[in-house]
Image (cartoon, rainbow, N blue to C red; front, side, top):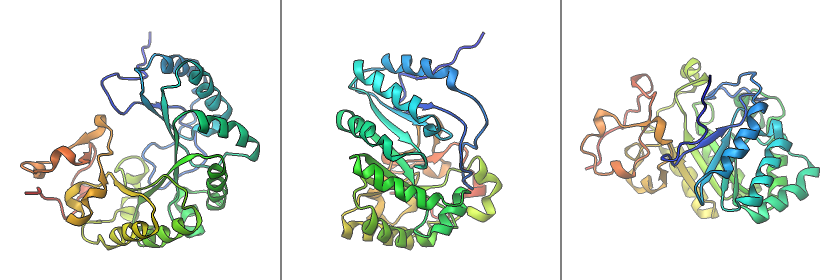
Length: 291
């Protein structure tokens, strides 16, 4: 008596929720973990992938997908046999790779388009570990970022902006350039105002429009060091004009909206917009139409 639609052909932002289980408790998590077993759906995900349109990129998210690493990689390997045109963008906390995965991952990275989206929230171990709610997470993710680099992985490093790491952003840019310069891109992301972020709002909210200098400094450092850097979930009007070209149209179509203040904005077609659940409780002070 249940129908579950896995993909929507008209959408550009289809993502498999591979599991809702996770071994971290990020203070701003937009999809708080649940102890649900999704393994009965894995064969359906695999079948659905074979039915996708040509040259589709599909997201895989959680929870933490690599809690079921063997199952995940097995699905991708088998689907690639008949559908080598499909590309993947997998969100992972980077905690569960092992040396013995190296040859398997290298083969995958050599023959298909696969991007790993992995978070790093601070250059300071204690700050990163506190944000993700797991002691030792910083050391493990750094170890595995280096390991993934050795397998020719394409890595999108992801950093969500909060009040707890906002001033770290320029220092993190230097850290990235020195220690993991092989990343494909660094996505610096405005926080999604839902999930645990709501409960922790007073602790986490920062108005980057009133204080854009840390973001500007981080971008300048990346430019000097040759590190590609983009701003996700950041509306164009909330950044100084010289840096608006770094704002990526990043919010999935099904949870994106514009505000009454956006009326008459000349840049609306290129703007990331706002999360559907953005409201005055999270209001940035610099929102205004671009003439």
